[in-house]
Length: 87
Image (cartoon, rainbow, N blue to C red; front, side, top):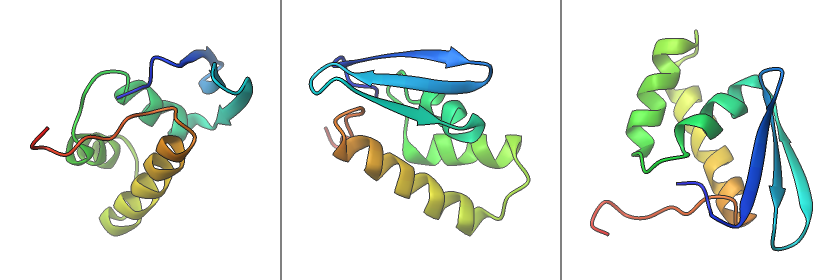
């Protein structure tokens, strides 16, 4: 789920995100922006992956690998919070 310590906007299908804690801007391409849209509310990684597989022509293994990589980077920057299913 997206952190409350950020603001973002759509830029012609791409996304610009401002981390309010460190005043750093981040940019996402159209695929990253779609993922960003999906994680605005609590959602499982599997549900995001499934949505991406329906919307894009990508191999499932690559989709999952790239998705997890992006989510880890967003979490490391404090832009999203990742919680276990048990939480």
